[in-house]
Image (tube, rainbow, N blue to C red):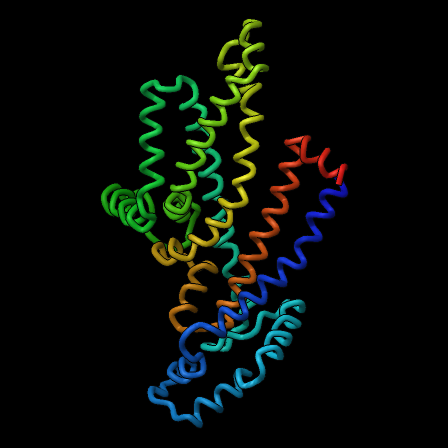
Length: 314
């Protein structure tokens, strides 16, 4: 198990280097010139070639790409992701300032996903084909199908405008995160519900579950105390993907609900072609995604002994 964990952790280094290179190149091959955007931000609407060249030199964009990449990467290792091309603020400091908002949103969304998705899966597998199963299956398909921004607008109209029980924006209290986190988690809840249902039904048909039932144990006890743990294996595997999707989807949700997180920060940077911010965002979210998936792999090995044995053989 220890060797398996070390081997997994060592894979982080080349992956992060690849992500950093992709983030850097993404900013360089994107259309538009950040120097022109920076000049327009200081009221230079029609800059001359000389002004553009001077701004490119000031921003360090006149240097060869390999030199720019190495310089940026060295600074990243020092904890400095550079300065915004637009307002000249520190990208690292701004992301640290906004990070708590995105963390709260993501954790709450992941909580909705696991709590509601697994609970729905348990109820759906209780009596497969029954009324409750068909009803929850229909709801899960609806949650999988509806676009996030439609669900966000619907939630705002119902809970903020009509019922007036939840705020539409801001981060004044924990209530501010309820709607956006649920909207962010909606499709994942549908996936988790259907996956949990299928896994539980499969486990209830396994030999150990049939033997437990033949010994007089109730279906409830077999389902919750025997089949449930084994059904978690595919859900644990997908949790890392869920987290990546939540981080990626947070940009749109944060913009709709006016949450000052790193997702909105990156989306605003895309509009203004602030590539230094975009690079920092891609690198940060990519690193988080990789680390979370490594942790999930290790947890998967804890739950599934076959992985540990395979690790010892290798």
